[in-house]
Length: 306
Picture (cartoon, rainbow, N blue to C red):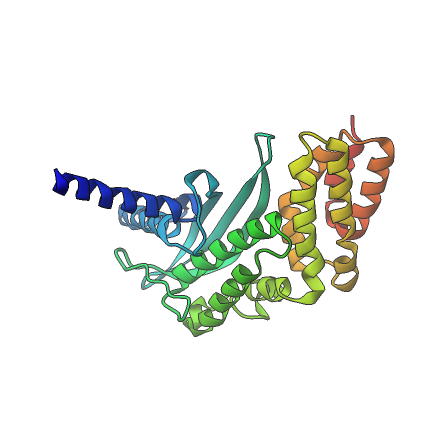
């Protein structure tokens, strides 16, 4: 009886520990290699999907406690377009993440982005090693980098500048990735792809010049979206304040990569929020948006459409 009791006690602590310190992401993984022909390729990428799924849904990126229902919902879709030989592939990494809105049964997009600078090596069965203190492979570095980005965006949306440590970890991943082979360095260096790359995105996020963007993430979600269910007028006011706060970033860095990524995720949500606003609010928010995201003017015109 004592032995059974001891076993149950150990089992309780194991389960309690694993529950309290669950991994952070609830990620759906897809791998699309339809542009490549051959049964062998399909077997390789089926294995890749399994390993990516295992890595991103089981590696713990923080020491924080996450209950199962607190995990961050996200999607990672690897689209492989070219086989460059010797296990080297080129493609696109499509990423989405979202957070729940208080009492609303709605999930607000935080990231909706395609990384087109994605070249990686994969040999079927290779171990998926990752260590923040060094470089193991481009593939695990890219996955870890975006895991930290999704976590940082989520943390910034719940507390003011709450994702700072996670942005810094993503920056360490970028620094370590400078050790990648020349064929896999694309996307990791400051001048790659007209300054629209992983290096620049993180460097900007940790720059004081872009702090208003991170502050707006908090105001937009915690003070705006999270009260929309009970107080839609107050919520819209806070969201408009968050958007207005982006004028400083737009003035100092017009058309910046970080602002593009923010509005890639948010433009349609903003339309839906302000379609039910007063005429005065619509006029005001359209004026703000014209100054901070003129590229999406056609989308925002739907705010006043019937």
